Length: 363
Image (tube, rainbow, N blue to C red):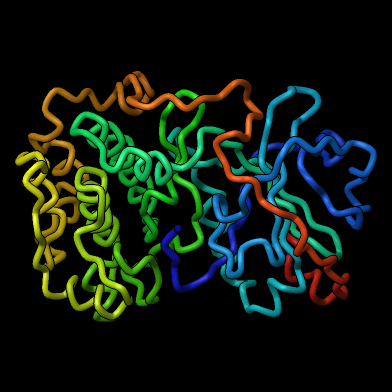
């Protein structure tokens, strides 16, 4: 069972190359009302991708779908997210979409699910992005119970490099957790779901209460205003969960979790590596001004920690490290690492008027 976030924001699009809809073959289910894309004679169903993997949607699958696509000229696979414009407007998510689009338009990184193309008609927004076929880190962690030190260290290095990149662009991610980390066919990480990401302004702070309860930093709960430091807190929680098999703060209800986070008391299983424990403690510091990663040297303070002794950070960035887990993938469009997702609850979306369409002129 996945943990739920408590503010639901739509995933945006990055326009990075000129692709025509007619260049794409749909390999998942596409409802027959998508006439503007002229896909009807190109459908070849081989499986569905759970929409949760690419967007923090409320009621996943109710008004959004993800289908597997193949670009005919290059024969490369991609995932297309399809969102109903009427529901984006009804749920007051228009500004969220625009905000996310602006963020994703400026980023491209080896450990982030990159978006590649966008399109819209009178009914839907279409967003094409990388298909990552290895499945969720969450699934591998639950199957293993917990990761050994080497495995946890490997994934932490790739996440650290990705966070460093985002923060260099004044972007705070705000939803780091195993469910939002995918493995590619080689076993390297890809961060997905930028529903809570935000570009920080000159104030370098934001006040929106959002995220996953177990991973919230104290300053978010206290509504004090927060910045990039919340991502380093979340990294501490993630390292703990990878090595212990459960998060450091958990309870049957969110308010119980918040109380434990603010109390700051952590119980340490005996098997947790002492050097990793030291890093986690320095990331889970209540005072964000003293939190590792948020001080003068930024991410360099994290990278210099002795848990990463011997790590070549250039090798990390260029994906030269050998992944500890290599997913079973038989071909680039393989869907075996994702659960089957039913399409029975899909409902056709109505067309919207010119005024509503104009809200998405830049799509």
